[in-house]
Image 1 (cartoon, rainbow, N blue to C red):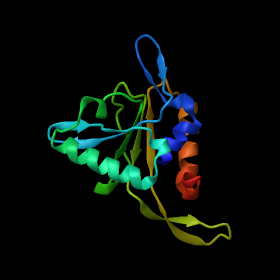
Image 2 (tube, one colour):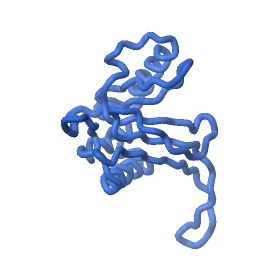
Image 3 (cartoon, rainbow, N blue to C red):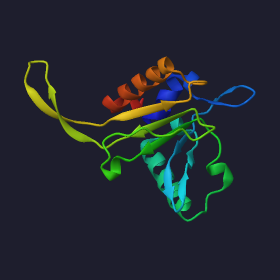
Image 4 (cartoon, helix red, strand yellow):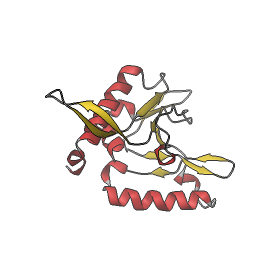
Length: 165
């Protein structure tokens, strides 16, 4: 949901590359990497910015289950410009994901960990943090645009109430 809303706020990043032109998308569709026997597939949550967290979770669970048994329709895993790859569930702290063409970006999400942080008063406290890494096809999304997208994503994650508005 946070990635979808970030793409809605930074529409130039909601794109992909083709030989003839950069394709800008009017809808926000999020592909999610799913491991299957012999490889990886990226089923798509269509119009993710318009859906609630519960609806996205139910839809993704269904897509992932059907992906693992080879029951996805072509339109359920082809197209789009943005992918999420989450290895946090395996305890991986951080990683760099490889872009799956024609997508222009992929967001690698690592495990949440308790880390020491200095508070405003100088005291040290422990907070839960995760590392995300955005890989970009610079023909479509350059570093500055990728940084804008990550800044909005971070704001959403750090203040989840923004996703309810």
